[in-house]
Length: 112
Length: 115
Image: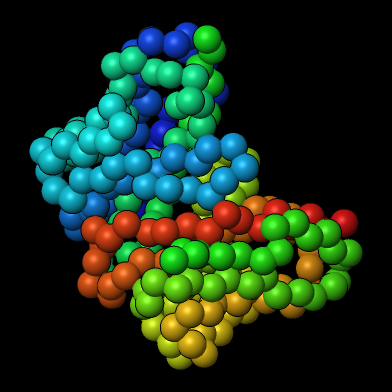
């Protein structure tokens, strides 16, 4: 079945460091890919998405490119801030039901 | 717009008790779903609904019931709580049936502990 695998966390970085969180997927058909973020004590909110191969999603300085050849959707940010500390989830949907399949989540802690 | 709301925020149950987690959305979204979040496992789909009167099972449906009598509400019922159901529960909605590209909107979650 369809699945998403994320790099293990937690990831601890200093402010202004470069961030990469790896995400790979397995899917039949043509999935849409998402990154969701969960700040402490809150629900999930969409960070960015890409709906077809070679699309780049971007938001708040974060970027991810849909790579069909490597089945990947790695999240990057050039300079992280303390306020980026959160749990990041990679996810996909296929078909028309909109059912999300999530990776296990990666906790990011950014220190001043 | 309140978005997606969930009640209660916290709940403690004893094994064997039943309860209903409430979820409501005011965005007129057709699609609603329930997920549970467990450490190291991400979120897993419990049940979902593509419209009023229509529900279906997700990845981990056992021990849970749902119904969708209105577009706005999608309650999740625990029939006989078990410690394995200790988790954080999220309700989500999105606007269209034909939109696997659509953004899902999540509620703030209900933290459930079963003793």
